[in-house]
Length: 150
Image (cartoon, rainbow, N blue to C red; front, top):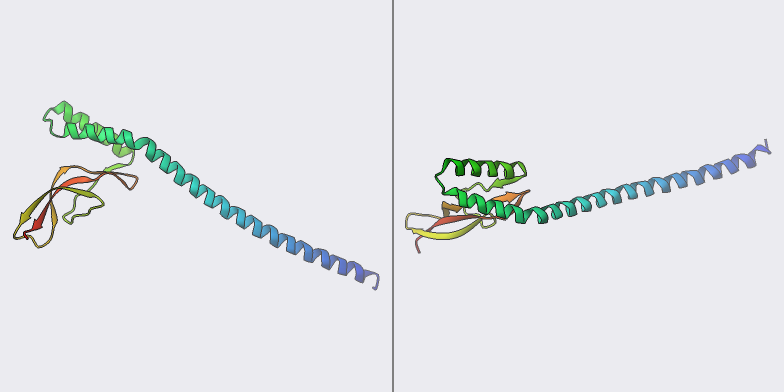
């Protein structure tokens, strides 16, 4: 029995070292996994920014073309306008919905009209549509606002 005790102590020491090593490796694995997640997030953010930077000038040009087609009463021009809008909409471009409350992050006031009956400033008309792409404003909607008389 006395011959076995040194071996048991040695095995206990080895087991303790293995537990420490496993704990260290588990901690290392978790840290590396978190680093990979952070790297993936940074890569995705950079990729999204690069995509936006690449596509934004093209979208501006298409939007200007849509503006030119807006007032044309020709059936062909209306068809082309609808098709262009469908194309950019499928790629994530959306027209900014116009609400009554003026939102400076989405709208650009290009004309103001005074109304003695108005209680607060509100959007009363749209001059040009605004557009967003992936949640970012490409161009704010150009609107007419009605405000209370001074």
